[in-house]
Each structure stands twice: as structure tokens, then as C-alpha cells.
Amino acid sequence: MTTQNSAADVDRALKAKHRAMWAQGDYPSLAAEVIPELGAVLVEACGVGPGHRVLDVGAGAGNAAIPAALAGADVVASDLTPELFEAGRLAAEKQGARLTWQEADAEALPFGDAEFDTVLSCVGVMFAPHHERAAGELVRVCRPGGTLGLLSWTPQGFIGRMFAAMKPYAPPPPPGAQPPPLWGDEDHVRALLGDRVTDVRAERRTVRVDRFPTPEAFRDYFKERYGPTISVYKNIAGEPDRAAALDRDLVALARDGDLAAGRDGTVLEWEYLLFTARRQD
Image 1: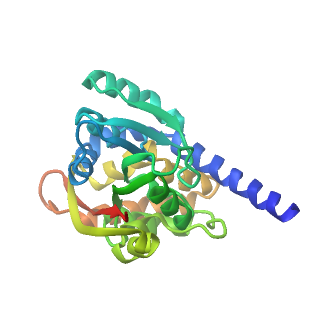
Image 2: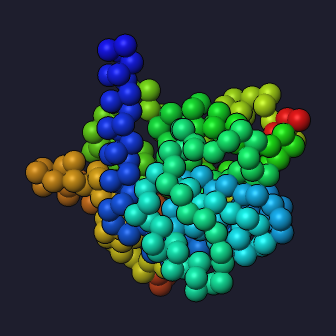
Image 3: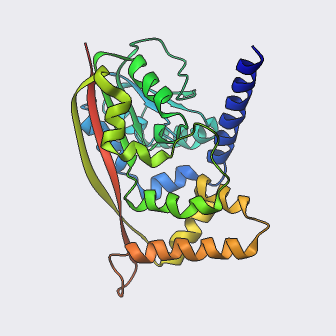
């Protein structure tokens, strides 16, 4: 019993840390300004329509949940970090979308078995530390014959490489935690879901990001707004030499990926995996 209690305490502490990480900065504005189209891409790929009961896992401020609601679905937007919901509510109201917002841990969803026609996540569930638990919950709450849809950054793409660049400056991950970009590896996702799904479709795509005038502007934007980047800088706050090195590494990453090098502005392409499947009947 003591061991079980200890494991539960560790898990609660980890989730509290994740919640605090995403609550800092301003992820809602980042999602709205940099990758606004991705939620709608996932909703379309899942075939969401009127009358569908939809769960968005790791919804943030509703980048996918709001387009699903606008498509006529009955939507629950769930996230471990409810601090993100206020921006989502304002955006939904502005667009005329009606949906439910509910705090929820992706690894222990507070919903019944087979409750939803479609379960989706747009660069959300990939940040749950225990992939098998999260995958099991996605399947559990989806009805037999229902749709699972995931949009995740790939390990080889720009954001995957950004996480790799930040890793040497971050604290060691807790035991059992897996890297988020693994959700962008088709083989990994297939292994997680196994024979519980069928009709798998997986496609690598890219989103073009051209809002940053310079590589330095990209770095500074993420230092100010993106929770994981802010957390890494906080980890080395007392080490100015390492902070300066991370500054250089992030600029080098953006410069290396700049498709407009030598011209005005910085143009980046961020690769993601679009994965859909049907839960086995």
C-alpha cells in the first residue's frame, strides 16, 4: 500500500507540474497566431458533423474543439490545465460556437466507456507523459466504430528538433515519461493502439509558419509564450552561460530551417503526423 501511495503521490506531483507549465506564458495566443488552421484540419480529417458527440483531449483553448462545434457537433473540450479555458470561451463566443469545457487528465479521463463518436487531439495528448495510459483512455471513451483522430508534431520535424535542442538544458524526465514527439511517429502510434483500431490512415504534412521576421524573433516569442520553453529557461535561470547557449541553439535551429534565408522574413515548415483510425466494433 505504501508503494502504491508513493506512486500516486509522484503522479499527482508530475501532473501538477505539467499543469503549471502550460498555464505559464500564453499558449492560447500562440495557437491562434501561429497554427490556427491545424484544428480545422483534424476536424475535417475525422469527418466531424452535426449530431456527433466529440471529445477533444488536451484541447487547450479549443483549437480543434471550436471548429468541431462549428461543424455542428456536441463537443467537450478537456484539458489538464483549465487556466487555458478562459481564452477558449472568449474565442468560442466570438465565433458563435457552443461547447462544454471540462478539466481532465488525459491518462484518467472522467468519462464513461464508449461515450463519444469521435475522440481527437490536436498537439495535445502527445504531451501526456505516459503514452500507453493515454492511448488506452482515448480508445476506452470512443464508441465501437467511432473515430480516433490525432495531430502530433513529428520527431524529425521542426518542433521535434526544437525539443531535442532544449533537452540538454531541461531537468531529467521522471521515470516512465516518454518524449512527446513520439506521438508523431506512425509506428509508435500504431503500437500504442494495436488491434483495438482499424482503418488506419496516417500522413505526414507540414504547416508553413511565416510570422517571424527573424530567427531571433522566433526564439523570443517562444521564450515568452510557450510553456515548455519557458520551463527550460527557468531550469537554467541561475546559469547565464547555459541560457546564452540555449539562446544560440534556438536561433540556429530557426536559421537552419529558414526557407527564406537571404530574403525578407523567416519562413519555417513544421511537420506533423495526421493519424485517424476507427475503433474496432
